Length: 309
Image (cartoon, rainbow, N blue to C red):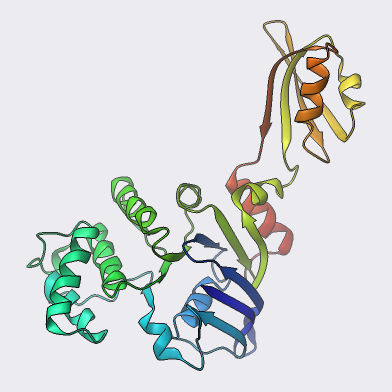
């Protein structure tokens, strides 16, 4: 649904994007992560046709962003970090205006505005002035203007920025409800939000893609990588260290007479450990694979590639 290949963009002497390539399949929700100045917003603006590129190819919903910008805009809903609202307008008038800009007739506008307001939790708010709304409700209106034409692709830049926990939860629920029917690419600095919403993340820093994969794959790339926690009896640390693939064994102490160990290995050692225990080589009470937090993974990946310009 989104195909980006060899994308480059510079602002004067500073390279904002350097050979950026990634894809997003139909119905996916993908996080687009990176430190400030990494190139996230630049990429999103190019995807939506609001910004040109110096080189590269971009297709959205099968249309070339540079050769067919109007067709792309018809199929994309874009929520920038600061929603484009007019404080003197009411919610209903503003959304009707947005729908008219999308080329809808009066009857279709009325239907779509009503359906969209219901979907984002704004039913009954037609007459409220935008300038009187809280930050959370302004974000809902911003999402409504991105959704009013029912686009197959949604590009959301910091959709929960500045919201309180209750407001964040409401926006999260809404985004989750969009999966499947819509392809969503979501930029955010809130990593708990990524874990709640996105099975996959693309990480950019200094204008380059440095990671692209599932959250588990990203966490496994953190310094130290994945490790296995075990509680055993009848086996010593040196014996654990002699198992195939095991690289490091760290003692963690004793709990209720069971020795606790952290085992690091080149490959997941759980199957081999469980097989040995089942064969009577030792007693096993706990066997659990643990991964670094997403925050540790993010800092590890970005740190190895350098900080943002």
